[in-house]
Image (tube, rainbow, N blue to C red; front, side, top):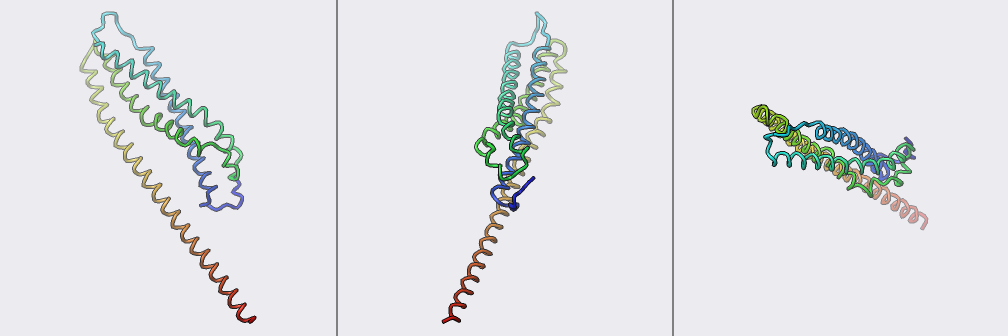
Length: 213
């Protein structure tokens, strides 16, 4: 990677770091969305219901709605990733910070965040809900105990998932805040150094002018 003499805290380098982060998010989002939406479609196609099933109609409606939402959310995230990722990859493969402004990751920042949130947070929550409903649809006619057992197992998993998600996002925000504060302090120090250098230069000029007079 050619930095063209840029420092680690220049706007170009910071934009390059955002570019790499956006690239990683889009790659993870596309892989996760393709995988989970495929599982959801297979689950809906392969589930076998008897003609005289005792599964409540409300449960079947919930299963259909949840599956449709799951696939739609992941397809939206996959579409955003597929449309934006090639433009970012084209700039990343050039390995030059000076060309970072040609990438659309700054202008399309919110689309990238939406794809990331849909794929990792909302999509995974819907997938867990899909498993619980699928267990009821599959085992309702045979054993309600099995269906309840699946829900009981999923409840602590869901709690752990939400706890980790909240902790992760809070830690990420705190980390970004610390990095921003550190960058501001470095800029202030740099400003003070420049001002002190300018003052010393002016004093030298004044002293030399006095000696000449």
